[in-house]
Structures are given as structure tokens and as C-alpha cells.
Image (cartoon, rainbow, N blue to C red; front, side, top):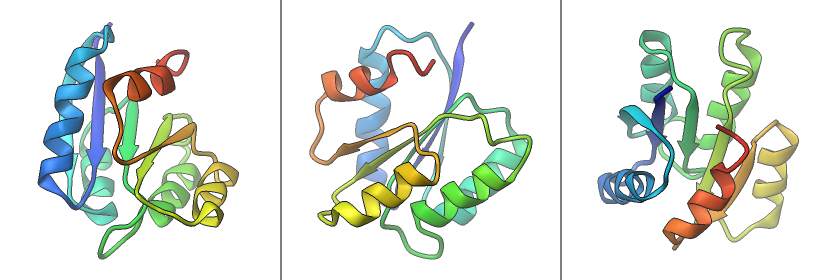
Length: 123
């Protein structure tokens, strides 16, 4: 069964890189949706069934921590695995995301193998 994925990052370049990295994994992919911040991501989630969210932490308008909080608070979305992808140097933000229910995290710059390793067992 193909997996629909939502990639959330304020950098269009990072979103494209993540799409390419996902294509290199052996995960059968369906639709890959994109959002530039947490607000856009919530709109995509309302309109689409998604099986995985890859989200940056630091974004304008609504950051990844708030997005994760909103996903976990919604009964329809709370079981969706969310992997944080971040340049965040502060271990505190990363630990906060894990405490809120993130399935894991990857630091930028990342490799295809790092992404694949985080997704094994999640999907």
C-alpha cells in the first residue's frame, strides 16, 4: 500500500531534497504533499489522508513544535508518525518534540540513509 507523505519546511529546496530522498528509499510512496509552515500543514492534513509527516522545527507562522502539538491533539491525526528534521542546535527543542510524541528526528544536513533509517519500522 502506497504511503502519502506531508513534507513541512519553509525552504522549498529542502522540500525538494526530501522528495528525492524519499524516492531513494524502498518505501512505496503515494502522494507527496508540501507545506511551507505549520498553518499550511494543518490545511493539507484537513484535506488529505496522510500516513507520515516530515517536519522542520524552525518555521515562520507556526513552528514544528506547535504543529506537532496540534497533530497530537486531533483524534484523527494523533497516530500519524511525525519525524522532525531540523538544524536546531538546541537539544532542548529536539527533546521537547520527542516528549510531545515525535517518532524521531534527523539533523540537517542529512543523508538518504539517515532518513531511511528513521522511517524503517514507522511505515
